[in-house]
Length: 101
Image (tube, rainbow, N blue to C red; front, side, top):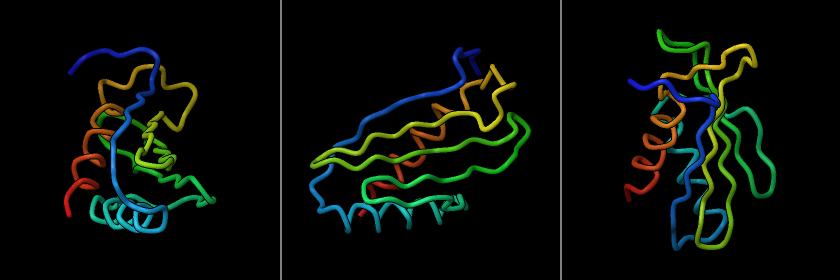
Protein backbone atom coordinates (compact mmCIF):
# COMPACT_ATOMS: atom_id res chain seq x y z
CA UNK A 1 0.00 0.00 0.00
CA UNK A 2 1.20 3.45 -0.78
CA UNK A 3 0.34 6.86 0.52
CA UNK A 4 -1.15 8.77 -2.40
CA UNK A 5 -2.10 12.44 -2.29
CA UNK A 6 -4.50 13.78 -3.47
CA UNK A 7 -7.12 11.19 -2.67
CA UNK A 8 -8.27 10.52 -6.23
CA UNK A 9 -7.17 8.63 -9.33
CA UNK A 10 -7.88 8.94 -13.06
CA UNK A 11 -7.48 6.30 -15.79
CA UNK A 12 -8.45 5.99 -19.45
CA UNK A 13 -9.45 2.77 -21.22
CA UNK A 14 -10.16 2.16 -24.90
CA UNK A 15 -13.18 0.38 -26.33
CA UNK A 16 -14.95 -0.20 -29.65
CA UNK A 17 -18.55 -0.15 -28.38
CA UNK A 18 -21.41 2.21 -29.01
CA UNK A 19 -22.56 4.36 -26.08
CA UNK A 20 -25.48 2.17 -24.98
CA UNK A 21 -23.45 -1.01 -25.15
CA UNK A 22 -20.56 0.59 -23.26
CA UNK A 23 -22.88 1.84 -20.50
CA UNK A 24 -24.60 -1.55 -20.23
CA UNK A 25 -21.24 -3.27 -19.89
CA UNK A 26 -20.15 -0.72 -17.25
CA UNK A 27 -23.34 -1.23 -15.21
CA UNK A 28 -22.90 -5.00 -15.36
CA UNK A 29 -19.25 -4.67 -14.25
CA UNK A 30 -20.18 -2.40 -11.35
CA UNK A 31 -23.01 -4.72 -10.32
CA UNK A 32 -20.54 -7.63 -10.27
CA UNK A 33 -18.39 -5.61 -7.87
CA UNK A 34 -21.45 -4.63 -5.76
CA UNK A 35 -21.15 -0.94 -6.52
CA UNK A 36 -24.37 1.08 -6.45
CA UNK A 37 -25.39 3.27 -9.38
CA UNK A 38 -25.88 6.72 -7.92
CA UNK A 39 -26.43 8.85 -11.03
CA UNK A 40 -26.75 8.42 -14.78
CA UNK A 41 -26.58 11.11 -17.46
CA UNK A 42 -26.13 10.89 -21.22
CA UNK A 43 -22.37 10.41 -21.10
CA UNK A 44 -21.68 9.56 -17.45
CA UNK A 45 -22.31 6.92 -14.84
CA UNK A 46 -21.54 7.62 -11.19
CA UNK A 47 -21.16 4.70 -8.76
CA UNK A 48 -20.83 4.59 -5.01
CA UNK A 49 -18.30 2.19 -3.49
CA UNK A 50 -19.05 1.11 0.06
CA UNK A 51 -17.14 1.68 3.26
CA UNK A 52 -14.28 -0.73 3.95
CA UNK A 53 -11.30 -1.04 6.26
CA UNK A 54 -9.20 1.29 4.06
CA UNK A 55 -11.66 4.13 3.50
CA UNK A 56 -15.02 5.70 4.18
CA UNK A 57 -16.09 4.87 0.63
CA UNK A 58 -15.47 6.28 -2.81
CA UNK A 59 -17.34 7.67 -5.78
CA UNK A 60 -16.36 6.39 -9.23
CA UNK A 61 -17.36 8.35 -12.33
CA UNK A 62 -17.22 6.78 -15.77
CA UNK A 63 -17.32 9.28 -18.66
CA UNK A 64 -18.02 7.77 -22.08
CA UNK A 65 -16.49 9.18 -25.25
CA UNK A 66 -16.14 7.62 -28.70
CA UNK A 67 -13.66 4.73 -28.34
CA UNK A 68 -12.68 5.77 -24.80
CA UNK A 69 -13.93 5.62 -21.22
CA UNK A 70 -12.50 7.92 -18.58
CA UNK A 71 -12.50 6.53 -15.04
CA UNK A 72 -12.25 8.85 -12.04
CA UNK A 73 -12.34 7.62 -8.46
CA UNK A 74 -12.32 9.92 -5.44
CA UNK A 75 -12.95 9.60 -1.73
CA UNK A 76 -16.51 10.48 -0.73
CA UNK A 77 -15.46 12.48 2.31
CA UNK A 78 -13.43 15.62 1.74
CA UNK A 79 -11.78 15.08 5.13
CA UNK A 80 -10.20 11.85 3.89
CA UNK A 81 -7.02 13.11 2.29
CA UNK A 82 -5.18 9.76 2.25
CA UNK A 83 -6.57 6.95 0.11
CA UNK A 84 -3.92 4.24 0.62
CA UNK A 85 -4.16 3.36 -3.09
CA UNK A 86 -7.88 2.55 -2.91
CA UNK A 87 -8.91 4.91 -5.73
CA UNK A 88 -6.31 3.43 -8.06
CA UNK A 89 -7.46 -0.09 -7.20
CA UNK A 90 -11.10 0.96 -7.90
CA UNK A 91 -10.16 2.17 -11.40
CA UNK A 92 -8.04 -0.88 -12.13
CA UNK A 93 -10.75 -3.25 -10.88
CA UNK A 94 -13.59 -1.72 -12.89
CA UNK A 95 -11.35 -1.51 -15.98
CA UNK A 96 -10.51 -5.21 -15.70
CA UNK A 97 -14.13 -6.33 -15.30
CA UNK A 98 -15.34 -3.84 -17.96
CA UNK A 99 -12.89 -5.18 -20.54
CA UNK A 100 -14.10 -8.79 -20.09
CA UNK A 101 -16.55 -9.79 -22.86
